[in-house]
Amino acid sequence: MKKTFYLLATVMLLAGSLTFADEAMLIDFTQLEKDCVNDENGKATQNKRTVMDFSVAAGATFTSEQRELMKTSLALPEWEVELNSSARNVGSLAESRVVAAPVKDSAKVPFAGKEVMGVRIIFPSIAANANAKIRPAFEIPAYEPLADADDEGVRQEPTDEQKASGKTLFEDGYGVVKNVGTLKSIAVTTMGMNYPHSLYVLLKDNDGIERRYFMGYLGFDGWKTLIWNNPQYITEVRQREIRVYPIYPRGIPFVKFTGFQICRDAAHIGDNYIGYFKDVKVIYDKAILTSDRDIADEDLWGIITKKEAARQTAEMQRFGNNQINRYLEKEKMATETGFTSSIDENSTSNAQANGGQAAN
Image 1 (cartoon, rainbow, N blue to C red):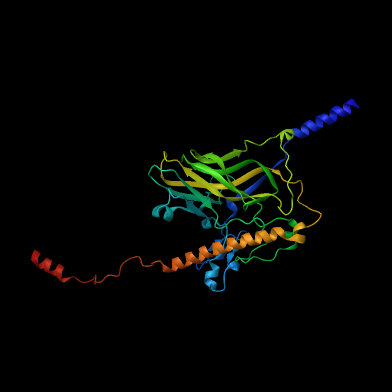
Image 2 (image 1 turned 90 degrees about the vertical axis):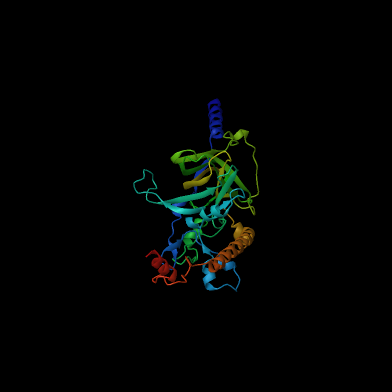
């Protein structure tokens, strides 16, 4: 009897000291290659897995050409650089951008031959604190149904297999991780270029709260994994404060990637910052042991769908208006590269002729 008691006590102690954290890929930039929606030159412009058509929220006054511009994705050139007021000027706005950066086939990394995120930011040369946020073109939706898209970026109806998977469109390395309780660690795979700037990861939870996590400084050369460890993470179960939240309609907790932030201190060098990012991973506690419910709450009540639809409609209208304004601004831009000459460049002017006679 005593042996059984001691054995049970030992098992309970071991169970209390174990961590139940899972590792997941939050976003993998090598998966965001352009593979659909060809331009006039036949080159792909969008990423098929993440393409979104925001024209569904547009009014009837827009032309089909304008509606095509409302189709976007997480393809790397679609990402944007947001500069703070200290860093914002004509030159920095024109040159700061995100590109798809191909990694050499000969590189000694597992993702050799693929494309990663390349970032250029122009920070001011004067002594001023400055920062820039690297954002996707739209806020990544957490509840978008998993479905394929064709070569034109048109989303198809979900298959039975996709419905049965219970996953959403932006899971599996496209920006969303579901069933997240407490974050234990965050990791970023990045290539440093000896810049002294600091790096933050921006995440948003299911309550719409965005938090930033300090990953470290970029003053190194080559590929490196920067890791943030939660200083308040408690591995001993007995020491944890147990909180129980209603599961529905709050929904299964999740985190989604909302961007990076690069901060440049006034005491450090300004001008160009160049950086490369491969992925972001998280280690987390599960919020609930299983998400497979006996009753399909959302199918019955539809509360989360209604909230998400309203949020997504607002996002679609905001982004759609931005794309239309960009289209109209592009139409107004000057296309001439130089002036048309007012003289016949193949003839000799009278002044030149007179000058030549005087010289004689």
